[in-house]
Image (cartoon, rainbow, N blue to C red):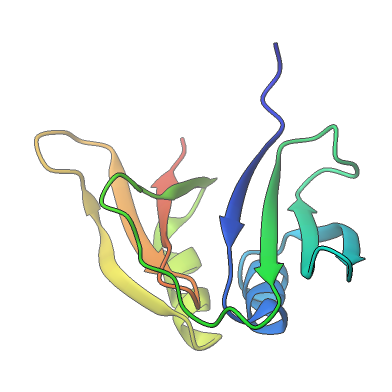
Length: 127
């Protein structure tokens, strides 16, 4: 068994691609349009192929809003300098919704940002 990807539905594909490539420095691995099905799939990763862990952005033609379910949590990314990461994210115009600090009832340093669709992005400081 191998983890492959997480799919998230997006309201604005270009805005979402810009966030994940420019703010989080991921690479577009593939960009496929399915006109018959009226959707587009974009895979992003820090690796070089769909064999590496990916985020799959799904854009359904004409769909501009989704209800965020209360089962949804967040996407998590490790970073060696969480303060620097949050400053860069803010400088690029993205929203940091929880500044860096220890997690409640623990010592791990975390922060949260938000992507253009409202998905929470957790940053975890790695040692």
